[in-house]
Length: 504
Image 1: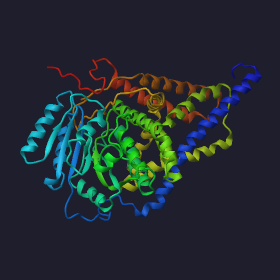
Image 2: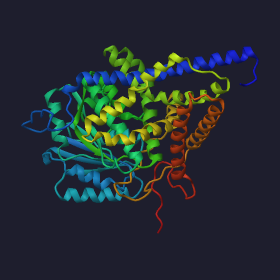
Image 3: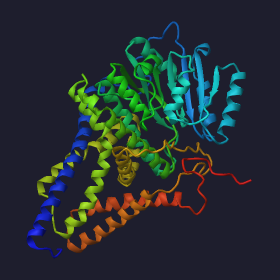
Image 4: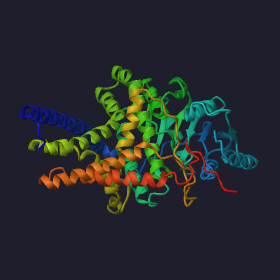
């Protein structure tokens, strides 16, 4: 033990025990949210369909409404042709379909999109290129600028990494015509490259959990359903009534859908309609994506928290919305839990035996991961091989997510850095992201966890060994991969995901 005066040691030990208990309570709260979500899903399971053949088809309209498909892109030369081709192949009456390729690129992507638009216009498609002199407002600004030029009554949005199937609009548009209060319909995300690496396999499980269970529960139980930024269709009048696209958060999708729900619109999720997307194969790209989502979600919590709490929605819906928006705070709790371990070891402070009940709540999120795989895939057991990798990556991302939450809370601005895509079987490292200080913090935390393992073994305290080992592997893997990808041995051309300079 550290040689402290007895009274001081007792006081420090009591403080550590109290903070540790409060951290466990916080983690248990969000774990309990997972168990509550699973309970709701199990109760409504019989009315949810995940396959088109099992879902009752909506009535087909005699006269299809006009739809504008918006494709916001920025420096996407490796995937833009796949995206635009999928859009023009949508099975929808040609005279009722308009396609906007909204290109803010500052690399050779714009030349490629120009050629694609010209080619498809010559084939008779109503497709046009929308450009801006500056990238103000990032994606939200691009969508708002294009909306002013759009002709459609309904607006479908697809990001550059998506490949919607031909039937997408025919499966989504009829739901608007059944109920004039439906303002948005969201489809489930599928995956183009889930087997590319252990990282993409882990991401696929995480997204499956969110869409198959969480989005289903949000929609069916009316718990502030949300738009996921892509693979969805909006009623134009809903966008306009909710105040349009706004760029004051990094989650323009969550921002708009929250305003729509508060305005009384209904948002629907269709689990049987799937649009496949490319998963980030780079750890730096994945960290960038998750950081943007974490900061944007926290910004929306700060922006809408009071309005949500004062709204006329059910109390369960209000609490669910606030907890899900704040859920990225669990990363900070996890870091605090790790940092508490060494002082507790040094002072021989051991958790109370009954605190093991908090572990029950910790099963909430893993249970959702398992259940989503069972729902979606016949050979789901094989996919669970990637679950340990997902849990380790989730631990390793805690630094990135904590930094993002703190930026949102302190009001620090961050540019909208889009997630680079490489295309299936595409070039290696087509777009690069820079190394950040977070990578070195991750490696330091891995070393901290290694020191904790050594100290625990020396003192014969086996309790924290598993947690230390998990943090060692999680932070070590994420930090090492980030170091490998971002080490400036070669000149980094991309401060914000710009293309590398090609050698002539």
